[in-house]
Image (cartoon, rainbow, N blue to C red; front, side, top):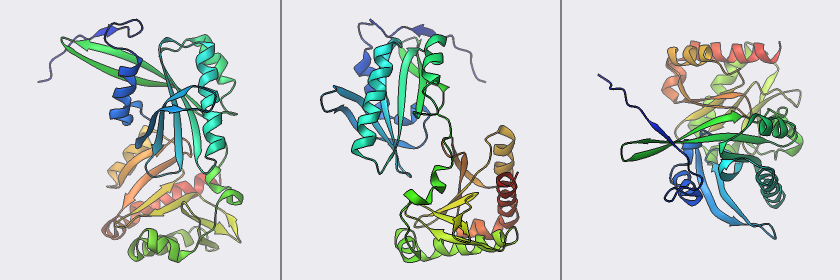
Length: 289
């Protein structure tokens, strides 16, 4: 039987023990607590040319996506948002090969502040996360809640003008002959939806194209022992339950691209053929609605 426990909210600003560096260290130890996906620490207190230090630089383990994170105790203020955006801008200019997102973490993100930064959202990929410290006896924990998410700024992964084209051998080396072959098998199912679609090999994913034009309602990322497929579907509890009920290994949801990430092994491809076909059909219909 689970016992109820009452937690006490702790204000970190001005606290004698739990300061901003302590919060940074907790995030650095386990960046996943921010709820930004499968991310790792790239750098901490990163020196910015003539602009101070970036609290945390995080990176997605499976994608070319970096997060410039600024932590502030207490409530957000104007200098905080300016500093966050400035560091984001410096990093994206220094490393344009990555996708960059500015992240503000604070104890109190006010409605007024949300109204202000929402003006930037859509032009600047910006995420606001509210942080709460909770105490139970001699234990203190941190809870992070995303209160402003970045908008999907168009179909970034479908912009072939900024994607470096590769070939099949590149993906066989990066993944394996078997996992790339799984893409061929899935393509057979795709052809029941549109026989003109073909695989298109890009640097960061294998997509689909019709007459040379991208048509990526699903993209593929072959690994050594499994294939990750990423159908574009609206995020919902119902869809999540349908995928899991079908026996599919759902890794997570990419809010940025609007895609579910599903891990498939060669055995899954045989045993879950109907479920995979249903997912592809749903994503295909969504792209054409």
